Length: 78
Image (cartoon, rainbow, N blue to C red; front, side):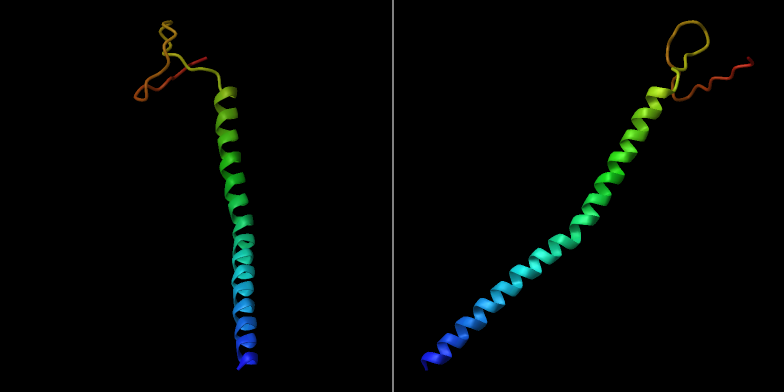
């Protein structure tokens, strides 16, 4: 009877340890995916930021210095 309790405890401990290891494994499996999506998002934001900094500001062409609205298109015959 005493040995049966010992065996049950060993089985329970082993099961708990396996569940813990499985959780660690799942976390490690997701880590590269999270890193990849984080880097992708970061790179996209940097591209957008550098693009907007590198583009010259467009004005309405009437000397007012006002930016173009979404409905206006700047056509230049230079």
